[in-house]
Length: 276
Image (cartoon, rainbow, N blue to C red; front, top):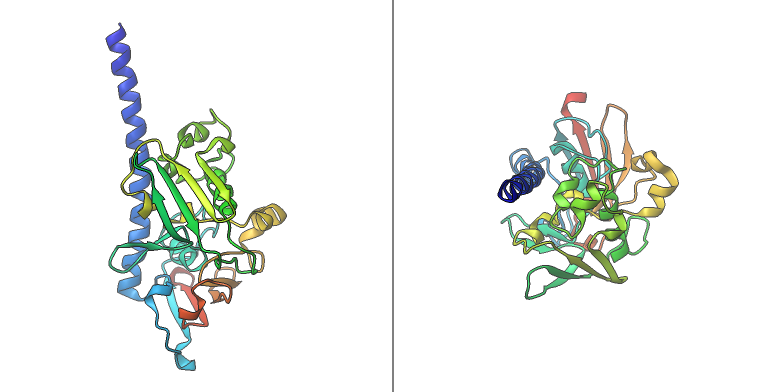
């Protein structure tokens, strides 16, 4: 009987691993498809490392691009699909980014260290990282966002993508409260993350939308309407100026973005094809 119990437990464990891997693969494929769409149709997000320090002629400072359909939401915790990802990657930035050669590069985190056991990561945030309202991006913004992501009340579709983090699975299943997640703000610009086991690809998934930081004050103040302009506060290269119902989105250059000097574009206009 003991043997049968062990087999049953093992099967349950493998099922959980399978579901988690499926979520990670699905979410990662969404990001990859967004990147492929960008390379094929010129419709992807604009990153600081893809542009030049040289000023662009006025006629080239406005970029018009298309996405397949209007995003259902611009809440990083609730968004799904390539169209939303393309827009969100212009409005927000995670601890890391992925460059055109698929290499992990610094995002909000200027550097990081990994403990010898491979299960503890310490990220050092840029002191010049800012939200689009000028407020500093701090370690607490990541703690807030990730706790919100795994909170069952949020009902985030990709919540299980955070399962590498200590206690994430238990929080998602409502066994533990969100404040037990293995992420800690050691100080305003130092974030510690503890993992269940060594996860070699962890740095790369940090560039995905579900790991983006969030500005808590605007979410608490505006509730479900926080993603509408002018309420949406992001930390990416652009901020959301307008979002027409069943129409286009207008993004303007974020003057507070830490890499703003390298961003040549002043405006991005996004046209959902299905709404035309």
